Image (cartoon, rainbow, N blue to C red):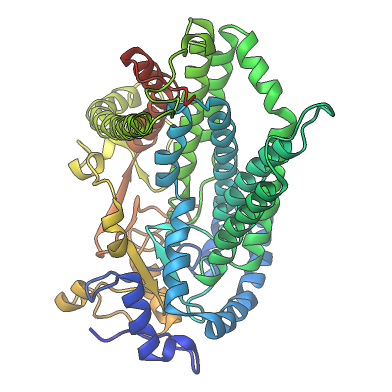
Length: 514
């Protein structure tokens, strides 16, 4: 398959040998899908008509930065892009995805560090929610391709660009761990001895700086964000960590020392945050990440409050993990074997719950919504089909394959000219009419996409309840999806924080590592 090169002269992307090397480093074959147009690229009048005047004015101000920064990013890519760097920054970007956090965050609760897990989860949830609110509120596109070349895993290119959620999360995480390092190196009590040496402290700081650089600069290198996106994301991350450092202990005390008022406040508050999330002009998937994290936090608070008030607090978890003494090689092997078993069973339990709960909700919620629609007016979100317009949710909405490390090379996507095409789609002519140049291609995608598929309503809002998949098929959203996600991810929070650690303690595997 011949490569569709960016319509930019004298750039790195114009050289076929560089493109081939980049594909080889990323593990891309000829059947790998290229990207479909991202959010925020409809004609300007669509946003002016749909958004309030002051919201549209904010978008135009950000858009002016995106326009000139896109050329700056393209010039940078032309100078520094290399196949090895392509692979590195693409794959390290997966460290900021919600799937990665869904796998890694539970480990804090499985291995006796719930305080760290609570803090990280709360900061990440606030970061994802606040940044997604900004994204759907401002509707600002990512850097334009061309002139930039965009590399990504998954569907993050379909989101708006401002601000960078990856930058927000990486900075808040780095500051969280830096605070732990600082306290270990400089104890608050003058009489206390440092827990770590100066060399360990400096090494830790270096690792954190390198982590932040890899994530933040990686967003620029891969063409996923502008400098403005990353700068605001960094500021948000620092602000969120500061808020946690100031208020975290008070929130913990409130949950520990109060009765039913805690779930009575937390549950409605989280549901309200889901309901009041801004509605975008385009079909932007970042709303779904916001739902997921808010719901996990809701489950975390409910589980933590229940455990503290019904006998499953710190005093319940007394067993150390088998082999925790590490006195002999046999102890070391026992500890690592137990840790591997706990990780596999714990993560697998979460994924089984996710699949089973999705299927249950998709079976129960649509008829429930249809019944309630005759009694009250149900809230409706743009791009989500109401239950009165469908009889059942397609099976693939409930049973989606779980990505693995083996799948990563096939999830990598490359956008070089503003609109992508699947090689298989080319063979059957699905995208035969799509033009090479970005402007015309964007226009045609817009005409066939969310704004023009079924027309617009009286307020200029897109009426079509879906987006376009990688293979060109229509992807529809259903109103049951929202409450399904809330139920599923709230359950994930409850299981990761409460149910699974209690199960490990009862089975004798313990959660204490020493």
